[in-house]
Image (cartoon, rainbow, N blue to C red; front, side, top):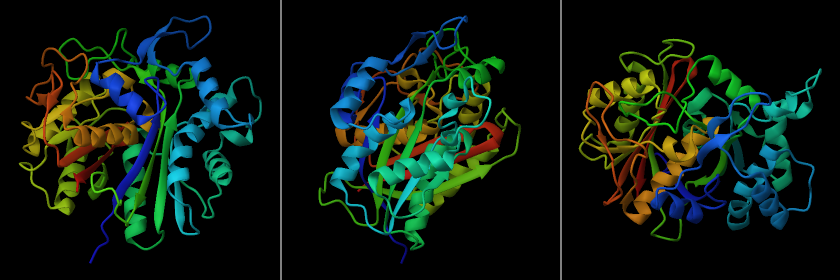
Amino acid sequence: MTKEIYITDYNCITPLGFDVESNWNALLVGKSGVALHKVIENSEAFFVSKIDEKKLEEEFNKHFDNQNFTRLEKMFLLSVKPLVERNPISDDTAFILSTTKGNISLLKNESTLPEGVYLSKLAQKLADFFGFKTKPIVVSNACVSGVMAISVAKNMIQAGKYKDAFVIAGDEISEFVISGFNSFQAIGGEPCKPYDKNRNGINLGEATAAAYITSTPSEDEKFRFKVLGDSAINDANHISGPSRTGDGLFASVQNAMKEAKVSAEQIDFISAHGTATLYNDEMEAIAFNRMNLQNVPLNSMKGYYGHCLGASGLLESIISMESALKKTLLSSKNFEEMGISQDLNIIKENQSAEIKYILKTASGFGGCNAAIVLEKA
């Protein structure tokens, strides 16, 4: 019999707060971290979701004495610390890091590659700090990384490679990332509007998130989330453009739901990728309709957090689980009028709901797509 895999603890560090409770309270009243920030010197300001520097330093100094860490590493440490304090690390505990760019900011004004810019070094530094015994695993697969990291933990525990796992995800706003997305003309000139008729591009964001995954259920019967099914498919459509037919996302959702033994009628809520770019939103609408999921309540968190790259999948999964615990569906911020060719049941205002089965999806550059099905057990 296949082991059942549970998420029994989580935390997040975002512009809306330094724990899950403060994030939830901010989301409940519609607060967004997206605002105009000057990211690149001698350039225009961009709408991004950025953590306040002063607040981050204050929070870090409350919990840590060592200052030999980059800004991103401090965000990671803050997200992981409460989980490590509540869940013991054994010789068979995995440390899985999800990030797309890591310490990319270290490259600025450097003629040689600093050691900290390598993702493996970043993962090892964080793992060593908390005393993990196993070799860290890095998941860096564009914007599906956060969802895939959950899948990697699930499958490795089921295969008997590890007893349990800490999954850590994060990225920060940097000149490199802003410049890259700006070169695609993908950045919106206003707060992003996923699926809306008047959307004009993404807002980038930054965050770190952490989850504890195990085959041992939580003693707290109110906090038990099973990872029922997962899948990742690459449709190899284009280096940056999603499939016009939604093939990769369709197959990912289909596989995850098949493993979970859950039908379209049973899914209570979809936490979608929803970047607010024309091609992504349209692709998702096509894929969800192909799976007969068009009537399932759906939202995108990008209007609140921006697109947090390697952190987004894990962060949005955490918020989805909070929604289930709080029996509340959050509105898809800034959505007003349907701007996709096929209908979706996009949540326009917060509403009460019983949520048992959650579908979380993500898509990214290079044709990658991923999906997981979570059950509030």
